Structures are given as C-alpha cells and as structure tokens.
Image (tube, rainbow, N blue to C red; front, side, top):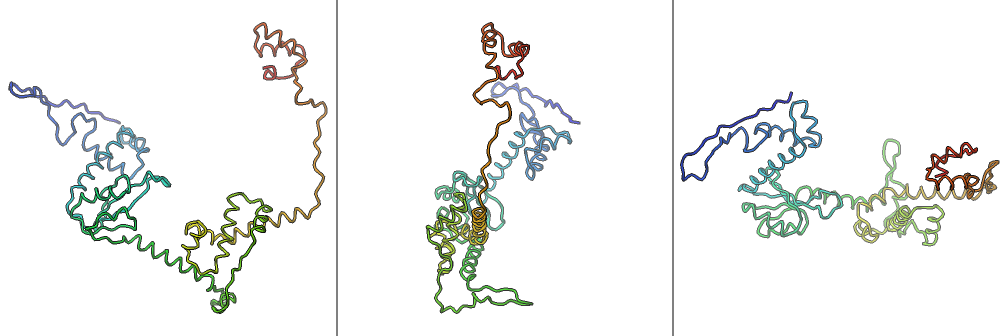
Length: 359
C-alpha cells in the first residue's frame, strides 16, 4: 500500500526586534529538502533504479512497491544528480590524462555533435558539451590545468592544447591498423587466390600468372552496351547506379591503385567500395538473370491480348441508376426532404439502389 506521512516541522518565533526574520522552521536536515515532497532516502533510491533502466517504464514498475512518482520527476532527479557529479568533476585537480572525442546524439545530424571528455587514467566520464569546435575544446580543457597529456583523434578541433603532449587514442590506432590491413589485402587478393584441393590448398591458375605478364582489365563494357543492358534488365535508378559503379570498380581491379584512390575516383567512400566489391558477383548475377528472363520472353510467341467483355445488362459508366427518378428526387428535395426520406419514397416506386446513389 502507498503510505503518505504528513510531517509538520516545529516552528520557532524570534522575539528580537533587530532580527530580519520572525518565524523559523526546522529545516529537517538529512530527512528532506525544503518544500520537498520526497524524502532524501527515497530520492537516492529512485536515482539508483532509474540510471540502469528506461525511465519511461519506471513509474509503472514502481507502483507495485507503493511508490507513486511521474516520469518528469524521475528525469528531474537524475538531471539534478548529474549536475552535482559534473560540478565535482570540474573541480577535480588530479586529472593528468584527458581523452577527447566527438559523438553524435542523432545519426546523420551535424547539429547534434557533442564533445566527450574522459579521464584517461581512471576511465571515468568527466563531461559532455554540445559542439565540436576548437573554441569549445579550449574552454573545457582550461577547467583542468593539471592535464599533461591529451589523447584525441585526428580531428583538428581538439588540437587546441598546444602546450600539452598530444597522443593518438588506442581506439583510432587499432582502427587505422585495420584500415591498412584491409587496403593491403584488397590489393593482393586478386593475385593470391587459393582453392581447396584434398587436404590442402592449391594456387589457382589465374593467380599463378607471372608478375611480368601484362595485366589488362578483365571487365570491359562499352557505355552504349552498358546502358542497353540496364534498360533491358529494367533496373531502377538505384540499381542502375550500383551496376555502373560495380562495372567501373571491376575495370579498376587490376590497376594496382589504393582503395582510397579508387574510392575517390568513383566518388564513393571506402566502406561503400568494400561493400560493392563484396556484392559484385550478386550484382552481376542479378542483371544476367533479368536479361535471361527478357530473352526467354522474347523467344515465346506473343499470345493474343485479352479481350475485355461486358456482363449482360451492363450500363455505361456515365448512366446513373437514379436518372429515371429524376423528377421525384428534385420534387422531394425542393420540399426539404433528405436522401434517406427520398430513398424510402423511391423504393416504393421500384428503385433498387442505395441511399448513397441518391445523395
């Protein structure tokens, strides 16, 4: 059951004339704040339960415990406690390594960019501010004068602390290593292909071609032939764009260019380049399948087109079933009758339609 305690604190009256106050109330320190409707212990409990949970569902989950509280109250308590934690973080004087990075609260929204600051030694969250500009970074870094090392990515906005030792954070070091490995494998994949043979692997004949042999693009297609295939396959604009990019990618497969250069030449990102390269067989197979279907349809003799027939007693679309009762409708409508009343009168005359037709 929900239990409410109506607490009436003691009041004291001051009889000193020079005192600015007249009535004083016991502040009840440690139990509740002034003008509070929740005790301090209950606020602490609500904050602990709300942080790892979904606040929108918390009011319903707390009702079986006898706690009646709204979503707005929970949000207000969590934000107030967060402000206290942020104030304590800004007052710290033991931050020596500062990790800085940017984060978007809404994917694809440039206006939702925020800067995140973390203690690099304790990995404790310190502060998040709106904006990713150099002025904001300088203002925030000035809050911790004890910082000696700034760990950041390659963004120029966080290079404001010129008097600090700047290093790359471990995440971006590993990410750069992965990108380098992917680019290297992408360049060597076409010349080192192994096929399973028995209990081992055997180099394919195409891959074992001497390096001195002149390498020519294996995928060539004239622009007119390419556009004709797109039209016959009935590709959408998005499918056609992907098909053109895939053909251009295959033409550059043997050019020994870096993935970044190929992506820049094609006007796409490296992630899209890797995805198109992986999906190239499926993209080409889809077009070939649709072309085969078109050729089979052309080989089959065209059947006679279907002939549209009309049912017996069908009327032209312009003819109304109310036309024979035109005079009755006009006369009753002039007398102020509505279509339900007119419909009842017309039914007696042999009308078989609905009131909507009269309306």
